[in-house]
Image (tube, rainbow, N blue to C red; front, side):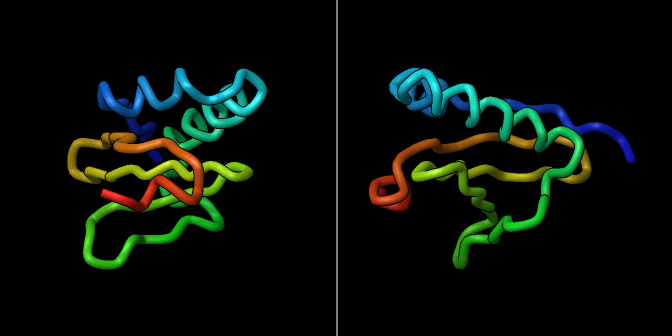
Length: 86
């Protein structure tokens, strides 16, 4: 199985910078693991959207998968209470 490329939107990169250091390292590791398996155990597809979410503690990582180009784009990173709000 080929490895996927990981892209972060500008807003997702800013959101990641705002996360405390210890949580940021765990989130970065979780995002890095998406390159090998973009649909790991515990992933959920969001209803009404072509986005997926994974959990890391109290944080959620929302991302899109483009299988044809082998790209995973991280769209949002945030606290579980805030991340789903538009």
